[in-house]
Image (cartoon, rainbow over all chains, first blue to last red; front, side, top):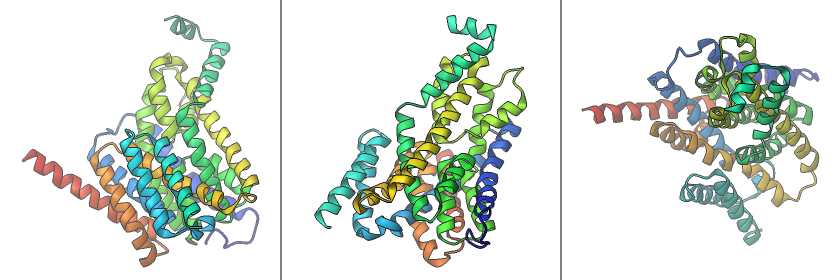
Length: 116
Length: 248
């Protein structure tokens, strides 16, 4: 039952609704329902945040290491290097996301110009 | 305190005014950074073979960017529906505590519950951070209107951003496309680190970055969930050990 398993116009929308909408709004609605019953500081919430953060980080690493499309034509070391340089710039600039994005992109751009 | 007096008197005009102020709050640096992340996401989705209608639809119904990036990642990897839903659900658990923190700030004795359920759909990192920051300057009875304006503007605005990027992305030179695809990882590398509430979150991020590609090679069908569980539990274990040592 993959995204392309059923050759009908509505199947991708059903896939997005179940795997996307249901899987996210379930937690939002649960949050409203629970109201003030769980503490932001409880250990369970810390565990939940750890798993969610690690999962998103895994996606990010895969986007850099195994990219598709135009990024796939760039050298692996350049992608990793641009990510590291951008991240260090973000830290050096006092955790300003915009600085990290701009420096990372600039590093990638310069690298592509230098090694076309 | 003039605004507070007006707010108490109620009235649709006042609600509309606070709705507009919320909408205007979307046009800010965090809003701009989010839009750039959606530019990257649109490129990613287009490349994964999704149509413009599917991607705009996904933007509206899922909204939170990490959930959408995971969903596109699962589609790219050819995951089945249950595995994809499980991975997205795992990546979105954090929305529950965010809503738990935000709801009491907006609720008054008169607020209908359905309003809170509808507004909760707008909760994602950027709107949540903006709301928690600006609510101090919004009278409590008007916060639902303010958040409705902020949230709906961010969602609709980024649905437009996604559609526009889809239409022009095919004509871009490869180097520009590469830069476009690089926006999503760059955005999350930085914002994920900044939004971590405790050191454990940053440890989880580093471990997740390290084991993600490993599991991608070992268990391609189940890589995201496996990496999230292994790296997340390890970070939590380190957190517990550190805490015990701190107390001893």
